[in-house]
Image 1 (tube, rainbow, N blue to C red):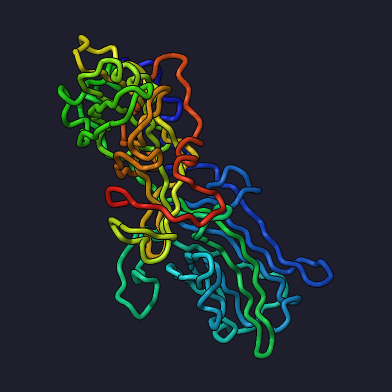
Image 2 (cartoon, rainbow, N blue to C red):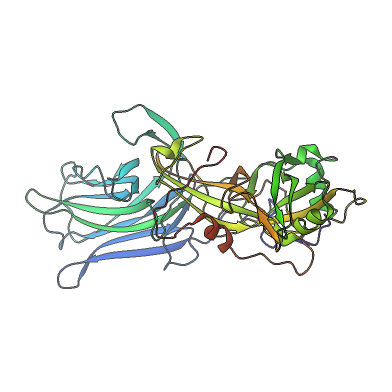
Length: 446
C-alpha cells in the first residue's frame, strides 16, 4: 500500500482531538426556574467544554463540574436547603443544601438503575447561624470519577463490581440509554413540594488507541507503503481462512479460500482508517477474477447493542431479542500492486474508515455497546453463493477509541477517487429494522 494523504482527522500529541483534555474556552450555560407569574427565582450556572452555550454541557473523564447556584430566598417560600445532583433524580432528596452527582442506565420498559452518586453540601438551614434573605449564591464543584461500583444485574443487594464510567448514550428508538443530569433541588419544609431545575449533560471518557507496530509507525511518518503480514507480523492479525463456495454463471460449482488480515492492535481512533488485506486463492482462474473485483468483498463495521443479562457477557450466544445490530461503516478495496502476481492468488488492499460521529463502546450492567468487523458472503454478478447472504463468514471484535496513540498520525492509502460506500447493504442483508426488536443468530461467539 502506498500512502496518498494524511487523514484529515488524525492528530498528533500536540494536536489532540477536540474532546481530549486541554485548556479550552469553557462555555457558560445558564438555566432558570420561574414561578407561576413568570418571575425567575432559581438559577443554575455551569461551565463546560461545549463549544457553545446553547449546546448541552460537555465533560470528559475526571473533569470537575463547577458552577454556581443562585436562589432568591424571598421568593422560595419555606426553603430549607438546596441540592444539586448529576443524574435523572437524586437519592439525597432528604438532605438539605447538598451538591451531588448521580446518573443512571435505563432499558425500555424497566426501572432505572443508578450507578453514580457524588455529593457535597451547599447550605443547610438547620446548621446555618441565621436564615439568609434575598438573592443568595453558592458555588459548587463536583469531581467526576472514572469508575463506579455497581452490581452486575443492577441490584444493590448483589455483589458489586467496578466498571469504567460509561459515556452518555441517547438515540431515538434505542432499547436503552445512559443519562447524566445536573439537577438543583430546593427542599421545602414539611407538607411542601420540593422544586427542581435540571439539565442533561454529555459525559465522554478519554480512551487512546494502542500504538501500532514500529514498522507501521515508520510508514505513517515517512509516507511509505505499509508492509504486509509477512514482513511485519507484529502489525497484522491474520484470521483463519474461510471457504467461499458457490456457483458461477449457473454452470459449475467453485470454491476458493479467503484470508483476511486486519491491522493491529485492534484499537482504532475515531476518524482513522482500518487497513485491511484480502487474499483469495484457488485453482479456478475465472472464479478468482470474478470474486477479486473490489465490489465483491462485503466487509462491515457493525455496532452491537446488548441489553439485559447479555450486556456483560464476554461471548453472548444463542438467540435473543435483546441484541441490536447495525452497520456503521463499510470497507472498500482495490487491487494490490505490491510484488509479482502469483498464479492461483489474488490480493486486495482495503480500508474501513471509523467515522468521527461514532459513539465509544462500553460494557456495563444491563446495557453495553460493542463493535466488530463482519465479513459477509461475497457478491458478484454471475456468482450465486452457497452461504446465506446474511450469514457472517468471519467476525472480529475491535475497540473504538477517542484518540490515537501519542505521536501516531494514521494515513489513508486509498488510491485517488475512491469513496466510502453506503451503509445499507449490511442492514438489508441482516434484516435489521431501525425501530424494530429483531431476533438474530450469533456467529462466532456474538
